Image 1 (cartoon, rainbow, N blue to C red):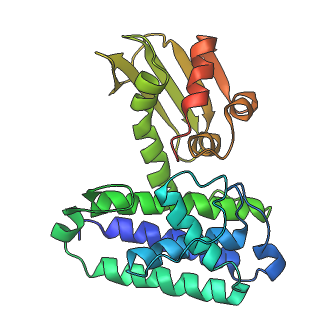
Image 2 (cartoon, rainbow, N blue to C red; image 1 turned 120 degrees about the vertical axis):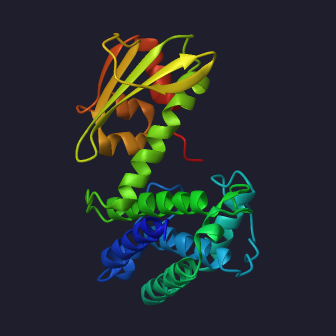
Image 3 (cartoon, one colour; image 1 turned 135 degrees about the vertical axis):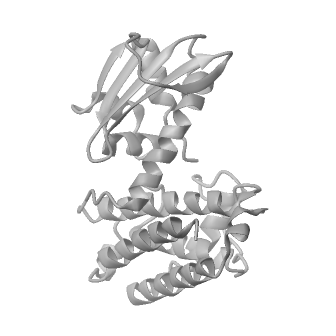
Length: 270
């Protein structure tokens, strides 16, 4: 089937979350993550809650004041599932995560290519199912790293989920350079990534739009070199622009003001 690779990426990512959590204590589940207001327990319950919601489970009522980090209807839905499941113990959280994600995988394996390509409702708007499930992989893989970071065991496993994350963030660079940074017409950006998923990306502004272009000898207006793990972290909002630019693995050449605007514009995860 055309989208087996996407099912494999989800299964791999969720399997790694299961492995990380397999021997963790209640205290570990209470460790705070970089997601505002969320512990490891909350992050896992968020992933579980999303799969339950997509499988047809009604959204619980969010009682009490809305937390400051909740800024839209999708955030309310996410927070409702997290808050409703916050009382669960570690064993229940692990079991519910396993059951919900495996149910999703079974449902996805039953679909044909036409169903994967069909445009339908999603929490992010109408889009083909395969596109939305790439977003689910991205979200789950980044939360895997949130969990690892909170437990002080960061790892870089270079699985298929990471490839989807880096490819997605690379595809966002033309929009960031042309629209968010408002780089001038004809200006060239070069982003060099080092690591297992190393690549060099060139983006040029043409008629007000960012366009990916082949490698060229032209000196870019801004050249940004950094490690893959720093690139996805700043794109996902896990580190801020100042920390990103100050990191020893980050090197910036060219227009300094545009480079600062670029760093401040890289977070594309709401």
